[in-house]
Image 1 (tube, rainbow, N blue to C red):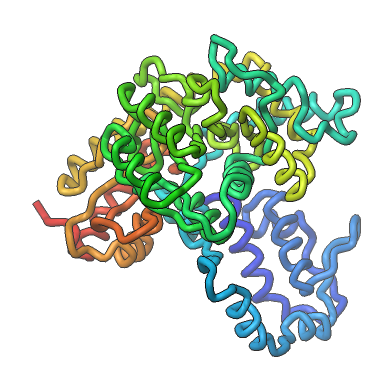
Image 2 (tube, rainbow, N blue to C red):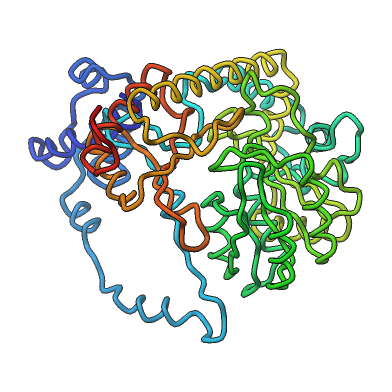
Length: 487
């Protein structure tokens, strides 16, 4: 059981027992709760904090937790009439504008923690066992002691961290400078900044089909119109990209050339120049979301350079992040661009969030400069290769009819085509009932999907054994939903 579910369960139990105590009466001590429920002191502390936030208990440092007054509980449960908001929110859009859709369902399908006992094959982050927790703790401790660590940082980011990102993005040739990099609060924040900078509300933005649902959500919430461009096993098709630029007048194309999410495709070498030329001819930008470069599998071989490294003319706005390969809470990434667009990106980021907290930047800098960093990357590369092999083997054995679109050599997912007529949402619900969480494919398409899909994460399970067990449970759900056959 993960700590989050333990906290929720303990909070639920304590909530149900509150009527045993009179108002102002002290609850059992933390030590007594630890012994009774066989959980950690941290779990007890967080569960009590949940009840305190709900107004059910009052905590007094050094004295314990006490049942709050019933009036507090009544006030918390009191509801006014918010029905007027339906009119206000639906009337915010002018009739001649592209509808602004604020919908996080595609993201929630991968971010929500499943119920206790369920195996997570839906997420996009490493499990705790693969996160460099010791190295992160040491980096944060060292960062906190740096002179000026808690002062106002440069708005563009700490200079040394910008230099590190510039070397990572530009490659050995040094085609990028620190002055062309902005430090961001992770990749999602960078995508939001880039789309707001490059396309006005109502404008079309070209996207790969299928593509990352978080980017589609950002585009729609900004009032943009995502237009899909078909891709295959070698990435986006340049001739269709050029046609889409001409047909729509779009001035931005968002792509993931390396281990694309969800297909795992790598943009073929003979397509890279054609994609850049299609954008240049249209007077448009390419937003390169390089989210998975540090999640290449052990057998991936040499990786192609970034598109930004091959672009001296400022066509590419590059995005990358440290979050995926470290921890969901290390939200540190980078935006890189050349030319006047850099100042617009900087201005929008300042308006939206001022800056990334300096202690977090300093901790990231400590982490990537430590001897533990290359060791961590090697560990992740080896583990992802082992998990990919185990997942593909388990699918062949348990669900031979659900083979990956392609077997990627990087990233953290497999893209599975379901049989025609299968309701992927119903299948995902059935899978959850059998104890495994997966992500339906519908939210990965900007328009009508060509068929039903599932995205299966190989990273979020706690171990290779749990990953294999999750696929075994998925087989039972597929049989129930008509997506599988008994041998």
